[in-house]
Length: 178
Image 1: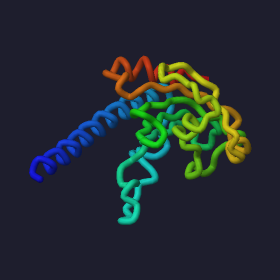
Image 2 (image 1 turned 135 degrees about the vertical axis):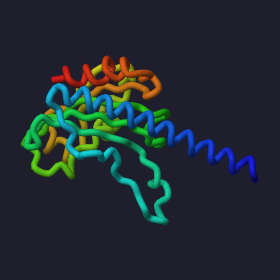
Image 3 (image 1 turned 60 degrees about the vertical axis):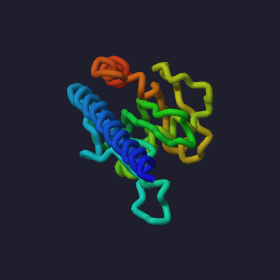
Image 4 (image 1 turned 90 degrees about the vertical axis):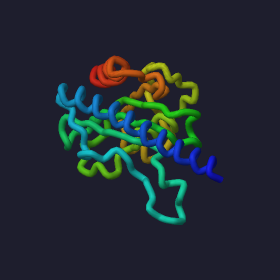
């Protein structure tokens, strides 16, 4: 039993370190986006959908982290970054970045389209995780009513190894995306 307990603690420590590294990635993207006039919309928030409920232990850990950026809070154009850990949807953590142009300016950012959802539920199931930019399409009724266009690219998170990778593979590409 002692060995099992140590293994559990090793996993928890590993997860803590992993999330510290994810925070550094997001902070670097925040800095790069801010230099170009893009502000994140939710102060320091990077998770959603977590549960405090004893009956929902599968939702105690995040299945995604996100940042949404806008040059104007009333704009219909956002840029976003999502890191997805949803084991039902991906084999390993991925980082997704791109833009969504809504048909109308947004007044309430509480019902935004979760960017990882747009990528994972896109009709094209053969997307590569190599930075290729894809037009995203969905047969979802709400998507069709709300979204004018969406584009995104993705990488396995382990392919983002240092600040240069963050800048060249994510930030610069996201800033230039139109």
